[in-house]
Length: 96
Image (cartoon, rainbow, N blue to C red):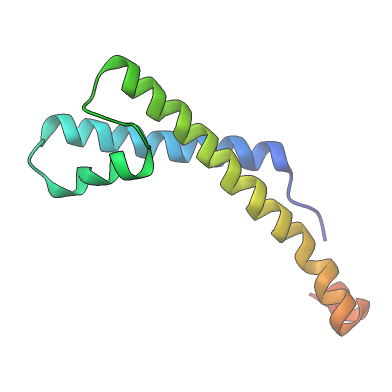
């Protein structure tokens, strides 16, 4: 089984989190009365109303969150076949 690469997964997850963040900010600007935008200050500590500095802060923080999630995911994804082989035997991993 081939291992999942860290770098590609980190950048893909980073871009996904950043696109989601930008869409959330755009929705906040377009519809400021929606209740769902209260999650931004919860996810990004110190986040206030939309200013250039806070937008950049949230953009960089979403990048770091994406990298952290990707690192944890890839670590366990690549560890799983070794763990199954140790518990059930190496022949089980080779057949799947």
